[in-house]
Length: 394
Image (cartoon, rainbow, N blue to C red; front, side, top):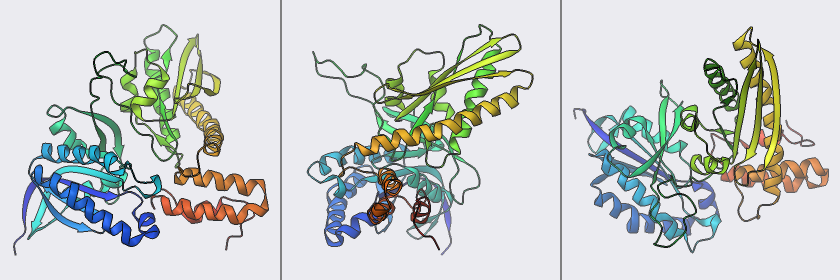
């Protein structure tokens, strides 16, 4: 059989936390998955003219002739999921991750191959539970055709794909409130995005307090260096520069930024020049309540701009990491035990191990739960265990 090629929109979906759900109740989970396919997924795919290429356990690969139909289908499915989960306990809910790509595919019989398919699968792996992530090719084709909000997550390096892929998170625009109602946010504002499972931060453009337009370049470069430095912290979700710089020159509240970008923490700062020296101030704020968690200032000479930017970026990342760890540990201690992410479980286990050697067994139990809940590419149980004191490691 001769292989042919065609352009197609590929939708890849799977169940977040599938292994944990199956481990808790295999037969019940299988029946719920069948019901989900029968009652929601298959009808929505058919309604939007899609073709199911293959299913793999919890995974689903769908081909659409129209990329607009593919995105409409994905958003419609995710909008219907909360109602299905309303009466289900948090630990037992089926939540989907969806990724969509538009690209050239190789057709052999009823199956599809090639980078067009692979990129869709990789983007789906990046998506958060309940999220729809799309590639830049999808965004470019549908952004003016669909009434959705597209959040630029920046370029992402994905497995086995040579070049980085720019990824966008897709969500519906907020509906207008009923007549006479007072909206929680301004009409037309982007909807609040869900927080990722791990700590998240956005670095806003620093204000140029010098009155010198040339210092804009220095201030912007300073922020880029800080974003790069923070991105090296593997357990931290950092919003890309393209997203945060949309706020440049605007007067916006930290809570609004956190809500619109879907982050817990926001960093803002300023740059002030005097002669050949410059002063940089920065502060870290909890975007959920506006509380200040950390603030500092850095002074330096402008003789070597790049060296100063590197120095400040390294210093900020060095002090931000422990500050965020402390804030996350305090936050996880106050969360209900039936609503914990893998990172919260890890923090609780670390705190137990540091408190008393007698709590090591309980800490290890929490680590097992964390490993079960976490995605393999983000967390490794061996790494978690080795980070704790008093635990023998072979």
